[in-house]
Length: 545
Image 1 (spheres, helix red, strand yellow):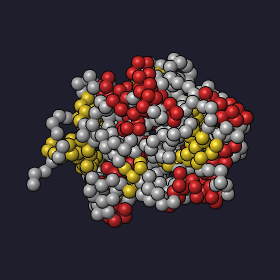
Image 2 (cartoon, rainbow, N blue to C red):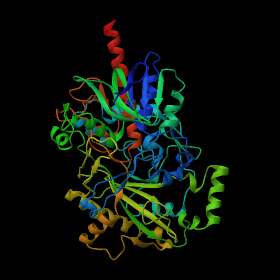
Image 3 (spheres, rainbow, N blue to C red):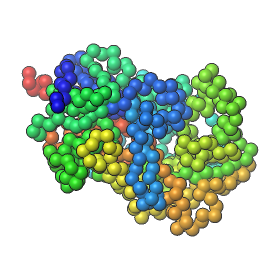
Image 4 (tube, rainbow, N blue to C red):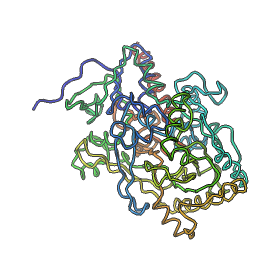
């Protein structure tokens, strides 16, 4: 049997994954015409209409054209349920299938990273990188950027029922907030989204398309990375499979692993980089010990409470007939507005589970619609969903390969609700949602609790029911943890410890999950990493001269 073919061409940098981070890296590194960049993507083109229509996430999740089609292991904290675990397998990665919410998290998140020893990652350090990419609808200011690649827009529709929820929350001390992204997201408001004129704006459109005009950037799609190529303690390239052909590409400078919090540790482990005992158990020879690979998995668990309402316009009632669906489709076709331009969540709130908290630890996503679960038909009655998640869970899981077979999905174990404090906050958050729905501002809508149901009242019953209805909000992070300690996977420059020529640049490097949605923090991480790489390259060139 013949071995892998050598890919033609010479490359300074090989980027594995053209997702949220990879598209940013490809753009920034290829700005230097003296640098050759190869970008490998396991999925295909984002040239698919449902990627670009905001409501199309419903048709992208669970679709092998755009989704890795992963599932979690059985979760004890969710009463033994296994969850569908969507990950974007397409140009733009998860920004092609996510909820489009533009959210940075809290200044305290990044200051905590710095306190953990990650020099250069405080809020003041990372804010310039958020601003660098941003093209904010309100223009340039101290806290927002303009003319960047990452479009940030207001949503193109509002709902009276959601404004009433905002009024109601105010009765309980949750005040309206003009900007969720100034470092303190406490309060309520309508989410800003990564859209332009009612069309999804993913990193493929924002960063990759303009860069593809450059002759020094090469993109190969449907190229699934099998493993990294090691030359002693240096990563020298990548072995990948495309349409049944096994290829090797070599990097003169660095390999940049940007495959995401699930697939980056998978590729490392398939390459023999990880915890020796874990690899041995799975029939993989150890090439480099890095015990933290695949550990420290964190995610936001969302508890979906549903309230039936009266005298209110919701998507349930608008889309419950062929005529209604046709009207919605026509509105989008003519004006790029209406329900088809909707992000999954329009309105949000950040608040505290306990007044003693320094910053909000709960995030609400409130939607003018309801289903039994994602992908199911809308209910035939008007209703809203009031989802709430614990922003800083203490429950930590892991992701590890199932064996040496590339085709097997990794074992994803989130360990949701394994920490006592997370159980406590889950119960508190449902009770808080219930309280908000008793507000005077909402009484004209006569809200009636459907999920978890008013009969579920004791802490024990609530926790049991949460196990039945809670689901992922698709924010996995942390599996190649950044740190200053020797047990971290990467150092604060995102270099994998003990190996030359390899950095990890995606959500997996977060030491702790951010207090909000994760897409834009990953764009920031890629911006900062690209800057590090370019400065390092200039320094190397200068010293050589």
